[in-house]
Image (cartoon, rainbow, N blue to C red):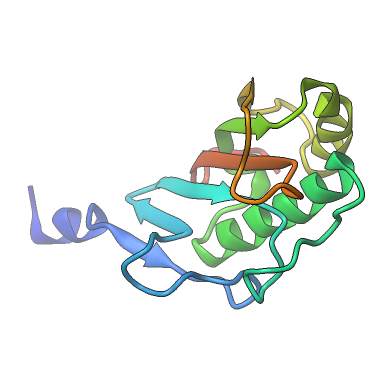
Length: 142
């Protein structure tokens, strides 16, 4: 492997100025290696990392989360069209309708592979869902 090729395979952390990033030593929101991008689980926490945006329902929280994912992907040189898979955790399976409605506002064409899982609880009672995603930069047609 050439030095140039090895450089493109180094793990890189990307930070969006529109999405709060926890202090070092916790986790990274966005990691890219080559063209592959991993995104941590996002919730509807505001940039103060405490209050919740879109508390009203899962649809509103999903829109906040998908916007965060979009912003982090753009910081890493990708787009929503590049998302290949995501896992969505909900505290109530009935919230899937709101999540799917929000998804349709952020994705077109071939939707990413997706898993929806109901969990007993998330970090705070008012957090209704958490979404993690993976993308392959440049793979989408959008």
